[in-house]
Figure 1: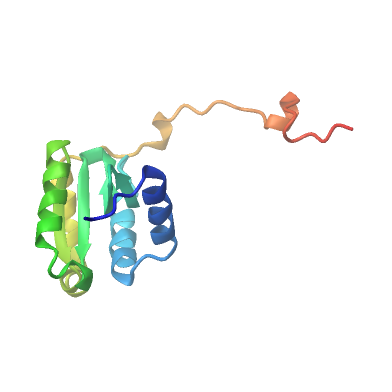
Figure 2: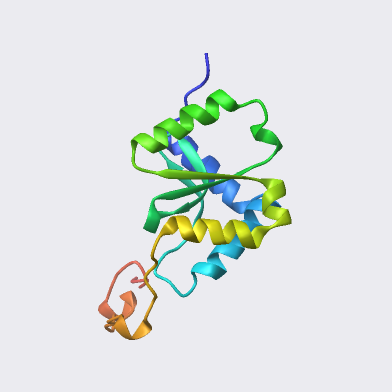
Length: 147
């Protein structure tokens, strides 16, 4: 019988994985971040979705990107169960082998961007920024050391 992890355990594990991503995940994350930098879409690394952790996730398009390395060998049933879970909740999953990412990262990024659909361009002039004083200026007690 396989062990079920709590949500907290899964989130802690994902946090640890974010701190030490694989070189392939880092490469793809950096390339996608650069490609999406002028749009309103963002990419998240090691994002928890239910009992699973997505390597990369683009919430704008509900798109999960999996970088499959050696750890995915022989885990076909697990990957199918996971894909079904994600699909039933409205997520789409794209899978790439580490070799694909290293050999042709540009094409992989292009394919991912096409899967995202039409992306909205980020326009700084459209952002309405209002002044918010620092918490201590408003007399917030957490920053003030009253004796």
